[in-house]
Image 1: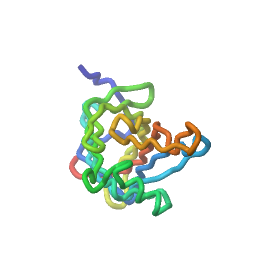
Image 2 (image 1 turned 90 degrees about the horizontal axis):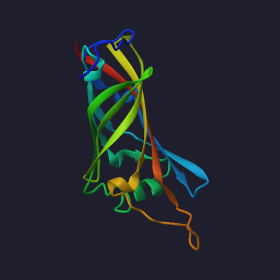
Image 3 (image 1 turned 90 degrees about the vertical axis):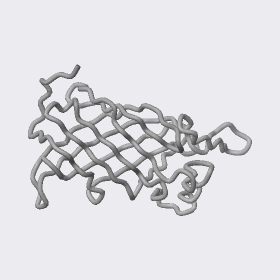
Image 4 (image 1 turned 135 degrees about the horizontal axis):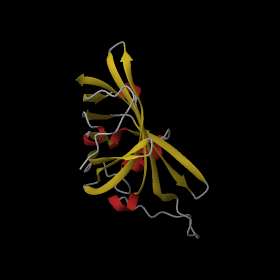
Length: 186
Protein backbone atom coordinates (compact mmCIF):
# COMPACT_ATOMS: atom_id res chain seq x y z
CA UNK A 1 0.00 0.00 0.00
CA UNK A 2 1.33 3.44 -0.90
CA UNK A 3 0.99 6.73 0.89
CA UNK A 4 -0.83 9.62 -0.80
CA UNK A 5 0.90 12.13 1.51
CA UNK A 6 4.13 12.41 -0.53
CA UNK A 7 4.58 16.02 -1.59
CA UNK A 8 7.16 17.16 -4.17
CA UNK A 9 7.22 20.88 -5.03
CA UNK A 10 6.21 21.47 -8.65
CA UNK A 11 5.55 17.76 -9.23
CA UNK A 12 4.00 16.91 -12.60
CA UNK A 13 2.40 13.56 -13.40
CA UNK A 14 3.01 12.21 -16.89
CA UNK A 15 5.20 10.24 -19.27
CA UNK A 16 8.76 11.52 -19.69
CA UNK A 17 11.58 10.69 -22.11
CA UNK A 18 15.15 10.83 -20.83
CA UNK A 19 17.07 13.54 -22.69
CA UNK A 20 20.51 12.08 -23.47
CA UNK A 21 21.90 15.50 -24.43
CA UNK A 22 21.29 16.86 -20.92
CA UNK A 23 21.87 13.63 -18.96
CA UNK A 24 24.91 11.68 -17.84
CA UNK A 25 25.36 7.99 -17.02
CA UNK A 26 28.65 7.57 -15.19
CA UNK A 27 30.56 5.14 -13.03
CA UNK A 28 33.76 4.86 -11.04
CA UNK A 29 35.82 1.88 -9.93
CA UNK A 30 38.95 1.58 -7.85
CA UNK A 31 42.07 0.73 -9.91
CA UNK A 32 45.07 -1.02 -8.34
CA UNK A 33 43.56 -0.26 -4.91
CA UNK A 34 44.95 3.30 -4.99
CA UNK A 35 42.93 5.43 -7.42
CA UNK A 36 39.57 5.56 -9.18
CA UNK A 37 38.91 5.31 -12.88
CA UNK A 38 35.79 7.10 -14.08
CA UNK A 39 33.81 6.43 -17.18
CA UNK A 40 30.50 7.00 -18.84
CA UNK A 41 28.12 5.55 -21.37
CA UNK A 42 27.40 7.88 -24.28
CA UNK A 43 24.28 6.15 -25.66
CA UNK A 44 21.22 5.45 -23.53
CA UNK A 45 17.46 5.93 -23.49
CA UNK A 46 14.65 5.61 -21.03
CA UNK A 47 11.13 6.45 -19.98
CA UNK A 48 9.89 7.74 -16.65
CA UNK A 49 6.21 7.59 -15.73
CA UNK A 50 5.24 9.84 -12.83
CA UNK A 51 1.82 9.25 -11.30
CA UNK A 52 -0.42 11.31 -9.04
CA UNK A 53 1.06 9.37 -6.14
CA UNK A 54 4.83 9.64 -6.72
CA UNK A 55 5.37 6.27 -5.00
CA UNK A 56 3.51 4.58 -7.87
CA UNK A 57 5.89 6.05 -10.49
CA UNK A 58 8.22 3.91 -12.63
CA UNK A 59 11.29 4.05 -14.84
CA UNK A 60 12.78 1.87 -17.57
CA UNK A 61 16.16 2.44 -19.20
CA UNK A 62 18.51 0.86 -21.72
CA UNK A 63 22.24 1.57 -22.01
CA UNK A 64 24.38 0.68 -25.02
CA UNK A 65 27.39 -1.00 -23.38
CA UNK A 66 29.39 -0.48 -26.57
CA UNK A 67 29.20 3.28 -25.97
CA UNK A 68 31.48 3.04 -22.93
CA UNK A 69 34.04 5.85 -22.69
CA UNK A 70 36.80 5.94 -20.06
CA UNK A 71 38.96 8.34 -22.05
CA UNK A 72 41.23 5.46 -23.10
CA UNK A 73 40.45 3.46 -26.26
CA UNK A 74 42.52 0.44 -25.17
CA UNK A 75 40.73 0.21 -21.83
CA UNK A 76 37.35 0.73 -23.51
CA UNK A 77 38.11 -2.14 -25.88
CA UNK A 78 39.07 -4.38 -22.96
CA UNK A 79 35.82 -3.48 -21.14
CA UNK A 80 33.84 -4.51 -24.25
CA UNK A 81 35.64 -7.89 -24.35
CA UNK A 82 34.65 -11.20 -22.76
CA UNK A 83 36.72 -10.25 -19.68
CA UNK A 84 34.04 -7.68 -18.82
CA UNK A 85 30.81 -6.83 -20.73
CA UNK A 86 31.17 -9.15 -23.75
CA UNK A 87 29.29 -6.60 -25.87
CA UNK A 88 29.20 -8.80 -28.97
CA UNK A 89 26.82 -11.15 -27.07
CA UNK A 90 25.33 -8.69 -24.54
CA UNK A 91 25.12 -5.25 -26.18
CA UNK A 92 22.86 -3.57 -23.62
CA UNK A 93 22.28 -3.09 -19.93
CA UNK A 94 18.66 -2.62 -18.84
CA UNK A 95 16.89 -1.37 -15.75
CA UNK A 96 13.18 -1.63 -14.90
CA UNK A 97 11.90 -0.29 -11.60
CA UNK A 98 9.72 -2.45 -9.39
CA UNK A 99 9.01 -0.11 -6.44
CA UNK A 100 9.53 3.41 -5.13
CA UNK A 101 9.64 4.37 -1.47
CA UNK A 102 10.36 7.55 0.42
CA UNK A 103 13.66 7.90 2.28
CA UNK A 104 13.64 11.21 4.18
CA UNK A 105 13.66 13.99 1.60
CA UNK A 106 14.79 11.57 -1.10
CA UNK A 107 13.51 8.28 -2.51
CA UNK A 108 14.69 4.73 -3.10
CA UNK A 109 13.92 3.24 -6.50
CA UNK A 110 14.19 -0.55 -6.47
CA UNK A 111 14.38 -2.41 -9.72
CA UNK A 112 15.76 -5.17 -11.89
CA UNK A 113 19.19 -4.46 -13.38
CA UNK A 114 20.30 -6.79 -16.18
CA UNK A 115 23.94 -7.03 -17.27
CA UNK A 116 25.30 -9.90 -19.41
CA UNK A 117 21.95 -11.69 -19.17
CA UNK A 118 22.02 -11.70 -15.36
CA UNK A 119 19.19 -9.87 -13.57
CA UNK A 120 19.52 -8.74 -9.96
CA UNK A 121 17.47 -6.40 -7.79
CA UNK A 122 19.26 -3.13 -7.02
CA UNK A 123 18.27 0.02 -5.16
CA UNK A 124 19.07 3.52 -6.37
CA UNK A 125 19.01 6.48 -4.02
CA UNK A 126 17.02 9.12 -5.90
CA UNK A 127 17.11 12.87 -5.40
CA UNK A 128 14.35 14.80 -7.15
CA UNK A 129 16.03 17.96 -8.41
CA UNK A 130 12.84 19.57 -9.63
CA UNK A 131 10.24 20.12 -12.32
CA UNK A 132 10.02 23.23 -14.46
CA UNK A 133 9.63 24.93 -17.81
CA UNK A 134 12.13 24.84 -20.68
CA UNK A 135 12.08 26.28 -24.20
CA UNK A 136 11.00 22.81 -25.43
CA UNK A 137 8.30 22.21 -22.78
CA UNK A 138 8.28 20.84 -19.24
CA UNK A 139 11.38 19.12 -17.84
CA UNK A 140 12.24 17.18 -14.71
CA UNK A 141 15.64 16.51 -13.15
CA UNK A 142 16.85 13.62 -11.01
CA UNK A 143 20.11 12.37 -9.51
CA UNK A 144 20.40 8.66 -8.74
CA UNK A 145 23.27 6.71 -7.19
CA UNK A 146 24.00 3.11 -6.32
CA UNK A 147 26.82 0.63 -5.87
CA UNK A 148 26.95 -2.85 -7.32
CA UNK A 149 29.35 -5.78 -7.16
CA UNK A 150 30.29 -6.54 -10.77
CA UNK A 151 30.67 -10.26 -9.98
CA UNK A 152 26.93 -10.46 -9.22
CA UNK A 153 26.37 -9.85 -12.95
CA UNK A 154 28.95 -12.27 -14.33
CA UNK A 155 31.64 -9.62 -14.82
CA UNK A 156 34.34 -11.80 -13.30
CA UNK A 157 37.69 -10.42 -14.50
CA UNK A 158 40.20 -11.51 -11.85
CA UNK A 159 43.39 -9.79 -12.99
CA UNK A 160 45.80 -8.81 -10.24
CA UNK A 161 49.21 -7.20 -10.06
CA UNK A 162 51.73 -10.00 -10.73
CA UNK A 163 53.16 -11.40 -7.52
CA UNK A 164 50.51 -9.73 -5.32
CA UNK A 165 46.85 -10.09 -4.40
CA UNK A 166 46.10 -6.47 -5.44
CA UNK A 167 43.18 -6.45 -7.90
CA UNK A 168 43.67 -4.42 -11.05
CA UNK A 169 39.96 -3.59 -10.98
CA UNK A 170 37.91 -3.58 -7.77
CA UNK A 171 34.66 -5.50 -7.53
CA UNK A 172 32.58 -2.57 -6.26
CA UNK A 173 31.29 -0.18 -8.93
CA UNK A 174 29.78 3.20 -8.03
CA UNK A 175 27.11 4.43 -10.45
CA UNK A 176 25.85 8.00 -10.75
CA UNK A 177 23.03 9.13 -13.00
CA UNK A 178 22.24 12.78 -13.73
CA UNK A 179 18.95 12.69 -15.59
CA UNK A 180 16.93 15.38 -17.31
CA UNK A 181 13.68 14.22 -18.88
CA UNK A 182 11.17 15.98 -21.09
CA UNK A 183 7.42 15.64 -20.64
CA UNK A 184 5.89 13.68 -23.53
CA UNK A 185 2.34 13.21 -22.21
CA UNK A 186 0.82 14.98 -19.23
